[in-house]
Length: 289
Ligand SMILES: C[S@@+](CC[C@H](N)C(=O)[O-])C[C@H]1O[C@@H](n2cnc3c(N)ncnc32)[C@H](O)[C@@H]1O
Image (cartoon, rainbow, N blue to C red; front, top):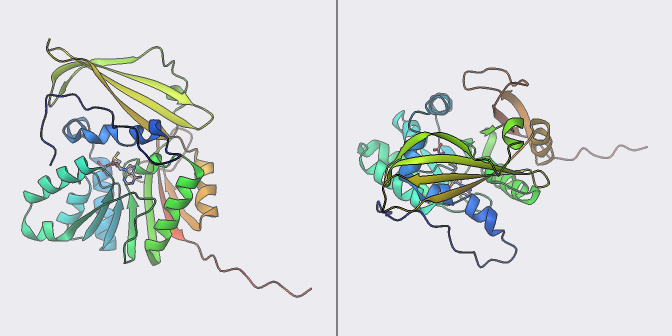
């Protein structure tokens, strides 16, 4: 269990694994090591919850949700009667999910099972009619190999005629072009553990790897608290590139929406929501010449 602490979240130690990019490892974990701040930062985000709840109720479950985190979407889905298996690699987020579930009625608790693991690897011995990857979880797949390993897992967990639905923020040319030397200041905010803070975000886009590195910089106003920064790394997927990746990894895109109320994806969309089915990979017989 992660206890509220007065210590700013520290960057995780460098991993021992060969070839693991520490910068990316930290960029996919540090933001989630502080679930209290995460919950306060996204407390008013409701449209995606309504979208996934309606989708899960229409399907009836069971649902496999990759990147379930602290259950912001998982628990509302379970409240409507749908069973959800949540997968996440963040111990802190899953602890928070357990705490939140403990406050739910027994029948809701019974519908949620959480598994800690890497979405590119975890094997679950069942198939699901609906597989989800919620709130930019897909953007933590940084390389083609990451995407291939992950989509292979989704494919393996999808029931025949099942659907894979996920959302991803679309690359914003303004954010990609920001000068990392000039932090973007917002009005002061309240951090649940450190109180009122000056806050700024620094954007640093690596165009070769198509990864946007965001540094969230907190400067607590209380004299005894040192400033700290939390890194977040998001792969930037352009829509046509994503369609190709899905196609060549065995998925047929049924629909892409550009907003939570079914708006079409167009040049002004800042989010994409992809609904896919597994494509039959059976090779057609070579024709006799
Ligand atoms: C933006 S959060 C979304 C959490 C939750 N679905 C929500 O909407 O609040 C992304 C989640 O993906 C998880 N995640 C990132 N990379 C992962 C990986 N390789 N395997 C499993 N989970 C991962 C993070 O720990 C985090 O909880």
